Image (cartoon, rainbow, N blue to C red; front, side, top):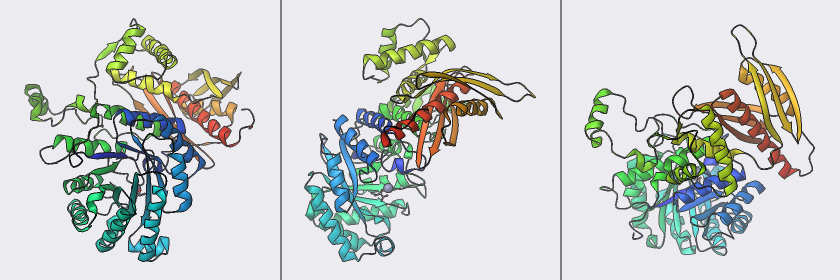
Length: 516
Ligand code: KIV
Ligand code: ZN
């Protein structure tokens, strides 16, 4: 594919996506997502903002060391300390990029930066040159370009390219633009900037008016060759352009776009599920491409048409984005080899024999409770195996709940905390509430419950429930997950998982803190 035909996919789920309130992820979770993005053949992964915190730095550095196929990018304001920190974080990457930015709209320059346009240009040029000391791959963004003056944008971008920027990003930071207008902005910039041919033009659209994907696609039709996007459209406020929408629009309408991505689109649904379960942000059923109903035909006339010829109502094949036919694959008597080969067919590779053994053990436990095991169950099972936090302080040993009409629900739980089994009992307004209170009697987490959500993985009353529990302690927010055919047990697992993550974070900050 020539440079003009290739559309670069820059995923910012781990940076802009993580800026969604409540979507914070641990380093281990970010690494899992980065590996899934690499497997999907995403070109550039923006792994974080290294200057934001030591944790962000550590995550970017670890991802730079772990992911070898995608370019790893670190974000930096146009400031010395940010650029040096980003340069340090991406040092070990096979291919590393620094993404530096400064605001260019009159409103941002005046009220946020308190700088004149000349000072902004000078700072941008300085920042790009500084970043070039660390890598040849430097991206420059004019923050709030969507509300900046076109003449000024031409000036700042021309100078950034002259200073060594190889990617020029045009962000619609507040999601203010409309598709035709944004497309024209891109066309004008590319036509008017004399050295435009020395850089790839990129767009970064926010979804405040629900137009992020449309604006990105309009820009591509007008010459942009990189799109910044996130899985499930996660991101600040209303989110960013959604990767799956942009990629599938370009792929499906190849007749209109003069470019395509090199993504393995069959990984889209897996990535979507992984991000949704890690962040606790569910995907709405009618969400394009990755929503549960995206390929479901309810109306009789549609079903009839699709049965006769799928093209009557389907513009894409569900399999091409990774939806399985949800057929029963394995059962109680299936062996380890059958399990491993079905995972391989689904494109799931486990890193070690130990991980495979753990997943197989869970599969056997599930097969005892659930007659039919679907591909979606396997996916959840593997995700679940990856949810356990490192050095777990607390494990769920047993849980008993009593729930009866007209009676107050009661729960008795046994946890193994720092190697010692302890029991807690409590009443609650429902069985889940009682179970959480009983656990709190033992662990006294001091955390506040921010979110509790349950998702059925497959249909039927024997389906596994996937639960997310979001806990906040001081300024730290974590999402815990758990899956089980019994949703009270899934809830308890998710609570324990969230608590272990909180403890893991405090251990990192204060290594000799006390016992539970
Ligand atoms: O929305 C925005 O402007 C950004 C920049 C840092 C690119 O996220
Ligand atoms: Zn953004």
